[in-house]
Every structure is written in C-alpha cells, then in structure tokens.
Image 1 (cartoon, rainbow, N blue to C red):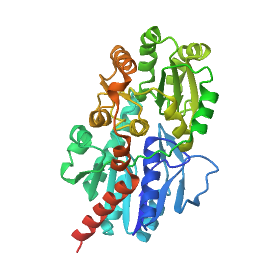
Image 2 (spheres, rainbow, N blue to C red):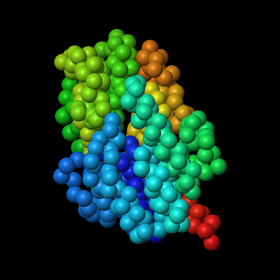
Image 3 (cartoon, rainbow, N blue to C red):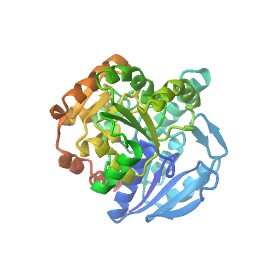
Length: 387
C-alpha cells in the first residue's frame, strides 16, 4: 500500500505529534508499505524533497505564518498530485488544510484516516480567537468528510468536543511509543555532564517550553519540594529558547528560573536525541506533566519514563491521566493547582516504591508496530466498503 501521511510540521521540528508521526511512518514502512510525508518547509534551507530512512519527504514552501500555523498556497496542487499517486491518506490534526485533503481522499475513493492529536486552544486574544474558530471549522469539515478518526484513548474521545460530534467514526488506537536502551556508560556520562554534583531527587520535565505545558506550576510548587528535599534538582529536556509563539511566556518566567539555575537547582538540556533520552530517564526520579489544557491529550513522555521504571505526576486531563491510571505508576494532580502538584510530587518522592509497574508490558502495548498494524487494518476496513 502507498500511504500519504500529512502534517504541518515534521522533522527536524520536535514535538509529541512529530515524534508520533515519524514512529508510525517508519513502522508502516517496516510492514512493507511505501510512505510519503507531505509537510511544510517551515525553515528556510530544508530541502523540498528528500529521502530519510526509506521515507520520502515532500515539503511545501511557506508563504505566511499565522500564530503557530502556516499558509502554503501551493499545497492544494501538491496534495492533488500526491493523492493520485497514493492508495491511502493519513492526516494528522489539528491542521488547517485537512478538509481539502480529506475531500481529495473521498472523491478519489482513497481510504482516509484522521489521527486527532489534540484540541486547539490558543492563548486569549481577539486574533487567536479568530484563528481558533477558523482552524476548528476546517477541522470539523475534515471530520465530516473523512472515513475514520483515530484517537489515543477512549477517555479523550469521550471528552473532546470535537470527537464527540463524530463518535461513530472514532476508533481508539494506542499511540506509538518507544525508547531505546542506554548502556551503563551512557547513563554515567549523562550524570557527569548534567548532574555532576549528584543532586537528588531529580524532577524532570520533557517537553517544549510552552504555556500549556504548565512550567509555571512546577516553578510555583518547587519551593515546597526544596523545603523537604534541599538537594532536589530540575532537569528540563526539550526546546526552551525561541519556541514559536512562547516568547512572552519565556520572558515572564525567566527571572525566577534564572535564580534556580544559579543555585544549581535547575538545568535546561535542550532538545535531546532519542538515544540521549534513553540516558536521561535513568537519571531522573520523577517526571512531571502539569499540562493545563486539552492541547495535551496523552503525553508520550509518561510512557517513556514508565518504560524506565520512573513514576509520573500528571494533570487530571482527559487522556493525560490515562498512563498513571493504567499503570499505577504515579499520581494524578488537579489541573492548574500548584499546591496540589507540590503535594503529589512529595508523596511520590517520599515513597517511590509504592509506584512501581511493568515496563515490559508497556513496551508491548505501545509498540509502533502494533500501532501501524491497527491503522493498516483501519485502511483495509474502509477499502472493503468501496467494493
């Protein structure tokens, strides 16, 4: 099967969505399919077409940026060309252009599946409300046209205003999550580089520095943790500088973070490769996911941490709370409540043995090959309806 997968941002951009898309595309490739990724040329200098690990990447020039989105006038022509060449379409939403892509799939009788990653919630403001309205309208139109919609969890599917409207099309498929192993030497080298003073416990965030990720909640809860654990340290893995749309958020929180950095209690690691992440998790004692809204719907990093036997404190958001509820490896904390976050961190750090789990079972449940097989079955189910 020739599969066209479409998303606004792809590698080298790093986010949970792009990582999922890459894992799934490579797993489909391993299963014998031809896969093309259609995406934006979001950075000058990125090639318009290239091969990466067997995947064909085709990028469309960007004419204009609007908030975190992009306008690509030539996308329609390129999408028509690529849809004709392929047997099935896999669309990653939210995505402004999804309706046109879904329409092409339906008109050409190409099985079309939307993977719905999150609801779109931009910061307050008249312009952002307009952007929200336009993108949500286009996403809604795409859902009406597409054949099926894939959701990470039943929890999120039953709470998302978007997915509830199209419940008959929704199928729940566990996302693709994997993390390589790290040698003892790699783990030790990571410690020497990023925590040479061997401060513990190590509290980690692994995400972009963005308002919806709840970084300020960790900052507000940290004093209570330091009071009980004076040698605690935060390791922040992920993009933290020049995050698109988050400049004012960074400027607001930076003075407080700078004090913790100077005290040796906080360190930014930047974006890490998957092999570096493999050494990162054994070096932490707790991962926190204090997300504040439905732009976070699961948090792959939770499963990655749990695959390394590390507990998690996660927000009580639909989907986001599921890894902890599924495994018992941590605690769920009220959304936006820094005091409760601090108390839950302290509870886990004080009795870590209470929050153990079965990492091997998680590796099997969230295998990218299992995810790919389930989406493949969905394409075949749709194709059978055309006969």
